[in-house]
Length: 217
Image 1 (cartoon, rainbow, N blue to C red):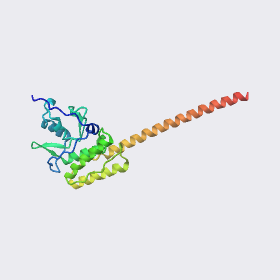
Image 2 (cartoon, rainbow, N blue to C red):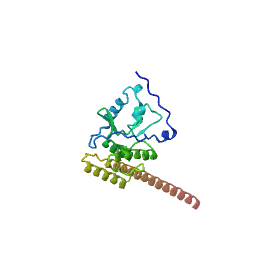
Image 3 (tube, one colour):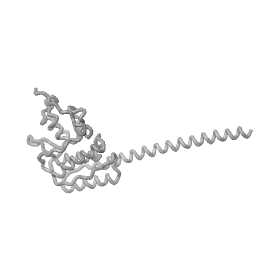
Image 4 (cartoon, one colour):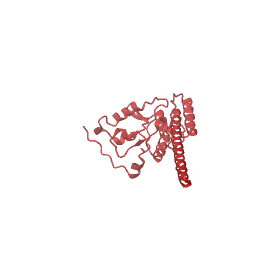
């Protein structure tokens, strides 16, 4: 067994931002199917796995968008793959890039990262999209997209599907459902606060009335 490759301590800027630098790889056919989990397994093997002691994590990292510099040998530290091993070589997969940039913008529950990390990740993935001569969707800066942003993302994916003949699963309904859930929670809290205020008013009114009656005696 070869010795595990020693990893250099990440620079402070890299530690804070945790976004993988852009790296150009040959492009897969634009209509190639994307299965993230299967691709991740092939990337692990290509980097020397599955034994982590044999893996070249610097190479492995280059296939992803975001990573955790505090846990460089933890496979779950690497997020949003968009490359795959095809005919023995790493290639950039268009549908993988589309899925990753959608997650950066909040689809499928989004990704656990700060706004600045997501912004940098969006820039990384936008460069890959332009390699395929496709204009990337705008970056959604807010943690929760509003209805207008959701519709814009939905329209973008519909256009992408029509333009390339792809079957795209739209996730706008997930966002709308989350917004409705949060709105319902806010309304419930508001109702509880109204009930509390009414109770306090009644209690104060009763106490004041009692005090007035005592003074009148």
